[in-house]
Image 1 (tube, rainbow, N blue to C red):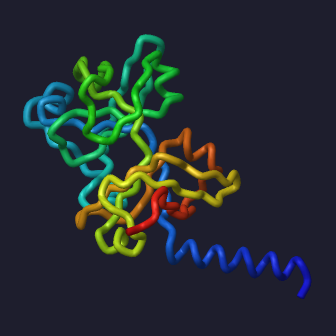
Image 2: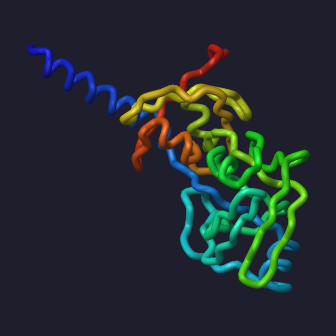
Length: 213
């Protein structure tokens, strides 16, 4: 058996193993989650956001409406709004976006916005100055309980994920979130996607940082 054939067989075995045990990776662009008060202020009292297309996570969707986010140095236009309405407004950007805006946003898990910077939101009708809510989302995996059991991971466990893309690397400090309401996907931002040579459908291999009990 020649070396080329051996290499091809190893690559095929690795690919199939990833399909069985890995998680699909999605790149998440900058976006905002709005609460009722902020929707009313930006678009008018009682305004209902318009469903545009579904996302991979059940019940989550892209809205037709767009807004701008305004920092000390620049403005980023055409920022996506994700539905449904949440309890608190949150703006998720990449570190590169933060540099362009002139604001250093901390890396946080979704919903953990206490003490984070604010930012100005701008619609065609109005503006809202947030006092907090700007974050760089901590890389994470949404996972069903069934998939979590297969992968032997637990809620809030921190793992590594090996990405075998055009620029292979291992992401550290990845938090696992488990819920029957989730679909199993890993989410990274576009800075991270560019770093690993992201392509749609790429998968990652979970590496546990501690041995399963």
